[in-house]
Length: 184
Image (cartoon, rainbow, N blue to C red; front, side):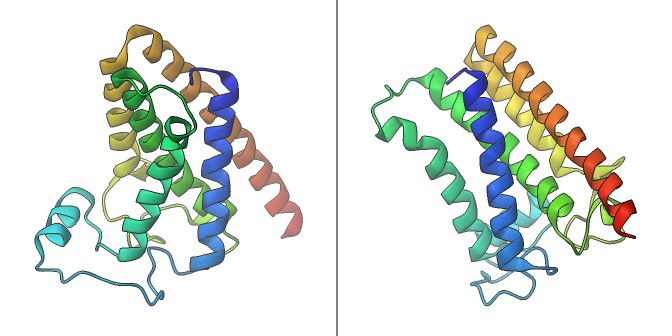
């Protein structure tokens, strides 16, 4: 689980899920126009979710999060021995995949892109910390803490993961900027 191949597979998972979500949502992020279940705002779960994310809870996003968790746990069903350390790695990866998938949704989405990645264009990300939604640094921090709780070896792997994810993402942002200017 601590290989470069696994890191690349995690990034590919985030990219494919972002593309899938674009096909499902189109220009309407946060399931705005989807006919999905929306728990009552007064329900305990909806209030708890809103308190931490400042977003309305949708059945679509509940299922999407569980799908990612299921995919990340597939190695355990395929015979990889479950340990506390491996579970912490999996949960750490979950939060990084969520952050990466969310950003790639904007990068790949023809209705958004880098130029519209800001608090004025994205209603569902209400709180921002500098150039990104507050959920991004919080997701990275939570992922870091989980890696730290696992072991020093996992923390070193996590630093590699972050470097590779940032490197690939920055290359894609650069490519996006260059190709969008040529198309304009």
